[in-house]
Image 1 (cartoon, one colour):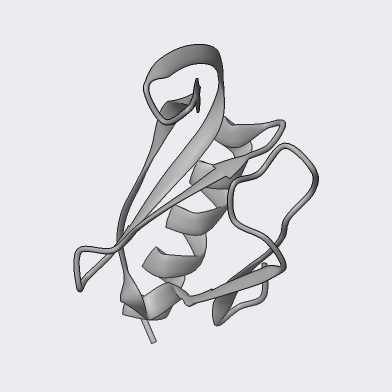
Image 2 (cartoon, one colour):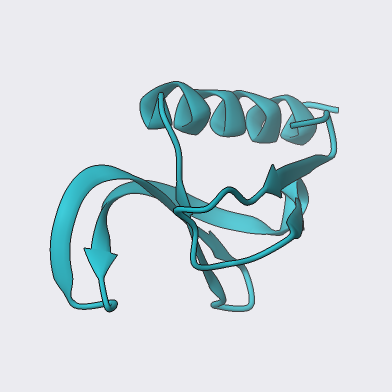
Length: 82
């Protein structure tokens, strides 16, 4: 994560491939979610959902998702104070 964007490089457990970049100013909310098999069956509580202001949802499988949520919010709040 930079001071302006969330940059995610996918690994083999992610549905999205390649690199995903989301402007922090475009993030509406982030929340903890479950990794789901075939998009339906909950497997593990190790994912983070990020929703943009346009309503697009991104789901990322990662460790330390609570710390990532806190870091995203801290950066977003810092931007609002500028």
